[in-house]
Length: 512
Ligand code: F6P
Image 1 (cartoon, rainbow, N blue to C red):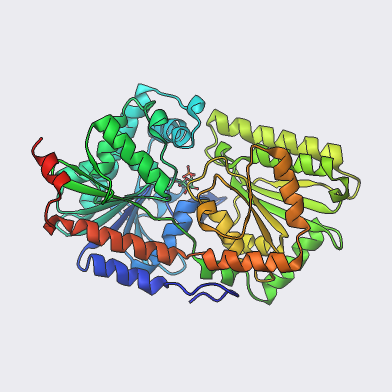
Image 2: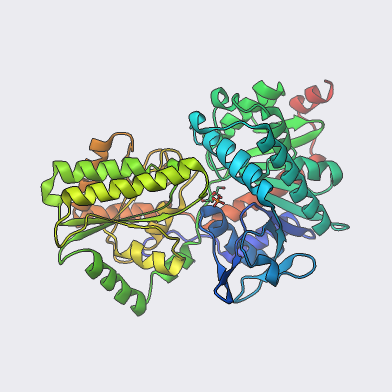
């Protein structure tokens, strides 16, 4: 049960476990992703554990803690090898072990070509509608395929001799499901894509598009955040593979196997954020944060993003500039704190963006700052939940400016932490969260003047309207456990559909 004021009741952790057992009573559960949920790193002579930034691990760790099983991922920490057993496994979370993390090792070439290359310099910009940023190189594709095979091999090892349900995550692993399906047709397979899926006109840029689509169709269930991404995917299947789509069932039959495609919007562990934002210690911290960043009676804005061109950070700073320029009375009154987590360093587009943000910050601070007031604070680090929650609670406004975003969980985290009814959410219409959350002030991040005016409107909003909007936001906020129950219910139905009678589309496909 959610504890927040006005929040809707929702499923809990135990319901997610029950839904999984209902779908797959006797199967071993395996999650596979590129990014690992816990990284062991050296800190001088000590080994410390870190939680990598990003929505995927934040969303799936509570799931694994609830249901147990094995999570297979790249061991990216420099001390990761020190803590695994001879089968490359370690129990996590360290403070209360409840599932197994199986690490897969990537060498320098793997990282360069599979992770920095095909995944993040081809698929990521393609799916975020930035074709000019894509780089097509044979060596990227070759490594992507090879690393996908290795992930599939690790899965096969983990489930050897056992019935299993295997859940792949995100765009790093589009080919692995087909390898798994070929070798173990009995395994239940699902995949959640986590980012947008591009329209056909852009997908045609993918030289290996047919292989990507076939890889994904090997799943019983393929999930995206929004119906639009499902439609984009299915249109690509029709056109690139020339395979008919059963639009009514949103399914594709390929070589006798059916893949169901579903919109399943992800969320956060709302209760965990509410807890992290509660208590006397947090209240004291909230007060300290406000004293540190704003003068008496001042206003505080916050943004929390990976430093990624899809997040619209330059556009956000342009809107802030426009606001302080057009409404001088907001100077010295409103301070903005941007938590920018460095991400994918080594890729030019990311390194360049980071430099550019630092430059813009200096420029804005020089232009409007005074001896006692700094307009923008740019904090280049990754903050854990217990430090983020008080910041969300301290803020008068949270600004999400994505140019393209599958979901954006920061918007949801901010809503969950509004225990004082203080905050207003300013949300880009291009974030998936905007489809679901009711009560935010929506902005077009490309229109910096109206974006700036909306930030001001948020800051000057009456208390009544603020509370009314927050109540709507809370009512529309679903938890991560809603998502899991939906995924497992859909996946169970999809995996067991083999017993169902054939549709006309199935029969047609089988006669080809
Ligand atoms: O799959 C997308 C995603 O995993 C997000 O959930 C997350 O925010 C981001 O990518 C993390 O990126 P990386 O693993 O490259 O650090």
